[in-house]
Length: 269
Image (cartoon, rainbow, N blue to C red; front, side):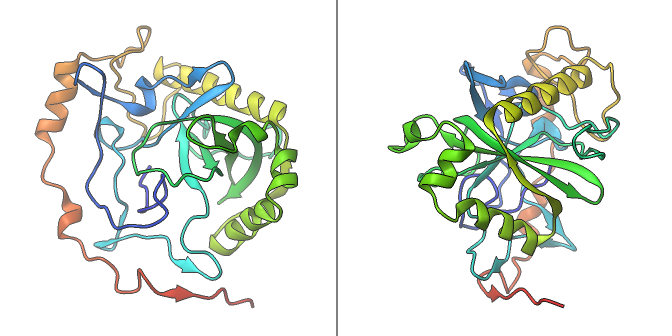
C-alpha cells in the first residue's frame, strides 16, 4: 500500500523517507504480518504497509511526483489519523455478503478520531467503535472508526459509534463528506461496535489464509519472521539482506508538487 504523506498519523508535513520497523532486539520485521492484531482484549494495533519490501511505510509517487492529499475545502488534508490493522486482509477473491463486492487486497483501514495527532509510522493501540463500508472501483474497502486507548484524555468516553455521534457532533457527517469529495462511492451507514468486531475477525481469518498460502495474494508480500505455520517465514538475517539490497530511495529525486500547500474547491456538476 503506497501511502500519501499524512495518511498515517501526521495530518501535515512532507516526510518522504521510507520507514522500516524493528523488534525489541533491533531486528527488521514485517509490520503487516509480524505486529499482532491484538494489543489486548478488544484493543487493536494500528499501523500500515503491504506491497513493498518489509512492508515499509512509503511515500506514494505518481508520474515522478510525490503524491499528497490535496487541501480540499474545507478540509486541511486528512481529518483523522489514518492507518490499518495488521494481520487483516480484505480478500479480492471473497465476495462480501454485506456489500456484494470483493475485497480491495489491502488490510482493514482505520480512521482514528482521537485528539492526538500521531507521528507517521507510529504504532498505536486503538479500540474499534464502528465501521463504514465503502466501495472503490467495485471493491469493498472497510473503514474502521476507532480511538486511542491511551494518551488521549477523552478515550474513556467512547465505547461505540453512538458515542461519537453524541460527543463529536458533525464528525461522522464530515467523514462521509470527506470521502465523497475525494473519490469514494459507498453505503453511507455506520455500523456498531459488534458489527465492526465481526468484520475485523473475518479479515483476520482471510489474512491467516493468505500468510499460510491457502490463498494466493495478488501482489502481497507475505514474508514474515514470526508466523510459525507460514511457508513465507524467514530468519532476521534474510530480512536484513532485503533492506541492504534496496537501492537508494527514489523519492528523494522526485519533485514535490507546487500545489501541495494550495486550497482546492470541490466543483459540483
